[in-house]
Amino acid sequence: MPHKMTITGSATGPLREYDRYVAFDMREKGSPSAPKGLKKSTFISYTVFVAKKAFNKTGLSKKSIMHEKILIQGEPTLDIPIDECPGEIGIICFQITVLPNKNDKEAKQEVSKAQQEVAATK
Image 1 (cartoon, rainbow, N blue to C red):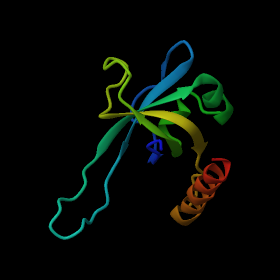
Image 2 (image 1 turned 90 degrees about the vertical axis):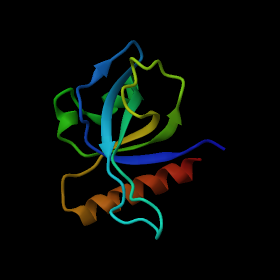
Image 3 (image 1 turned 180 degrees about the vertical axis):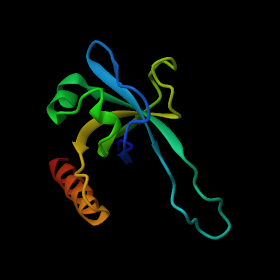
């Protein structure tokens, strides 16, 4: 069973291009509360690896990726050279979705819809 991950946010650094894929960094904060007795989660930095074909379908550009909220669905990887993966966790992206810049309620509905679509295809 693969390790599935879903993260949302904007790129925190520039888009990097390689032969067959692009990479960018994201940061996601943890929940403001934790179960009693456990420490609160902190920010985690991710390096996301996306196939060029999938990235091009999103309509994102080197400039717009820093300003758009995006949903990434994929799985973690430990097999990327450290110089290509400055984030704490590398993620191989299976699905990338640009979220609407509307209010949070509508964005959450879009995230839920995207997650349901991915679940239906697996």
